[in-house]
Amino acid sequence: MSGADRPTVAVCIPTYNQAQFVGRAVESALRQTGYPHVEVWVSDDASTDNTPAVMAALAARDPRVHYHRHDKNLGIAENASWVLKQPAAEFVVRLDSDDLLLPDYVRVLLERLVAHPDAAYAHSSVAVIDGNDVVQSVSHLFRPSEFVGADAALRDALKGYKTVANILMFRAEALRRANYYHDRPSYTEDYDLSVRLADLGYGNVYVSDVLAHYRVWGDAQGTRHHRKAMHLRGLTRLFHGPFIEAYRRRGWRVSEVKRARSRAAVRFATSVFMPWITAAERAELVPMLYELDNGWRVHLRVLLLRVGLAPVFAVAARGDAQLRGWAKRLLAAVRR
Image 1 (spheres, rainbow, N blue to C red):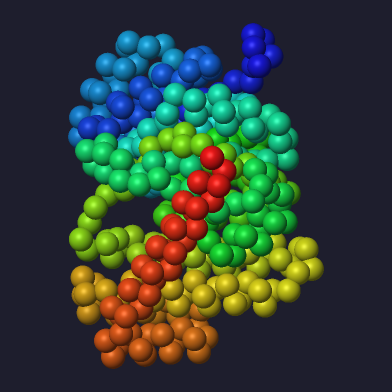
Image 2 (image 1 turned 60 degrees about the horizontal axis):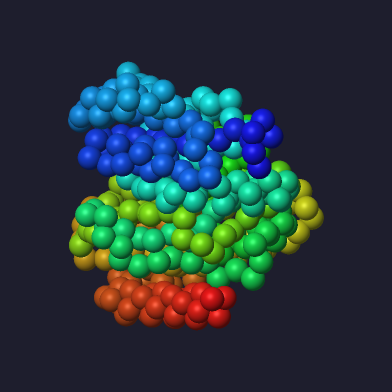
């Protein structure tokens, strides 16, 4: 792709109180090789830190940088929707303000999206970094093919959100058809969007190259209680709404969704009974868990957790994750 034939690309960065990272995220988008004419749009969700000053300096230095600060906080999903709608670009990248693009990100993923016109988005492997930018690990997907069609993507989504990080390049037309993240729950907005895009008939593309750095925050207490509550609400809405609707439209068995919903609730239950969740927080979360799925498997798991088996289930889950990690590393070695 060269000259006038090049599709337009914009990197869209929603941010809130991350002045220490947002500048590096913007600069990583500006340093793309092989595709240097990338716009960068930053939407500040009413930050109270030094973000305005950081962004004013960047915008003054490079005309490709566009910055807007909202007067009041919109929340994760609406702030992301707002910024993704602003550029008149054919392709847009969602990049959270604490993550980084590597120099070939735009060039490589754009080539794959152009090659697969039925794909709504492209994603890649990532290197996981900590708060000091130190690489902790590399995350890959175990996936036999680069492109997955809509029906296969929809069935795969029942097992979970099938990306390694929320760093995605979208076809802007597909986002418009899905109405972005509008009126969707935060903390599951990307998973929700992936299901709705598949329901619209779009597949997606995955590249095994490491093209971005995804920041994971160490926290001895795991995910905060209020995030768990929002996550549960999002999963409940997703499994009782878009999944069921998509399966019914296709004449597929809704029982598959119900089984997947039960598995998701059973997995989530263990985190509700971790030691750092207080009794008052647990009293709020357990009824929400039953809203996700009220079947006997979930009630049995909660009963076993109440008698002190949370550490056993947590160790089992870590073992499963280690096995998946080993399989991913083996696949990567075979590909090399």
